[in-house]
Image (cartoon, rainbow, N blue to C red; front, top):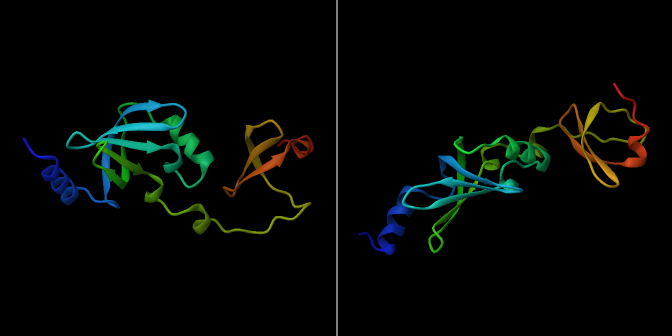
Length: 146
């Protein structure tokens, strides 16, 4: 049987932070955690915050992931005491802020988009350009439905 120190060295040589690995989803814990398999008895943990740089997209991805799915992730950290590996999917893609052309939106400008979620005083709006924003409910009633 390998000692913990030998296991640490073996694991570190095989799986380093920043390395991309494929894992199988073992459990989806709502509202925000995904548990995956890993090697040497380690468990992978993927938070909803590490699915995408954009929280609404992360929420959509979280809802789409099912037990048994095989997903690619980046190793962020390895905790040998708890035998857990922190994983990330968002580090496989560029941040939205670097790939979406940002333009200034002024009062009176017209945008095309959809309300994706409704909150108490605000609606979450996604434009056709992929931008997200909070829109006060008082403005939502003035929106032209297409």
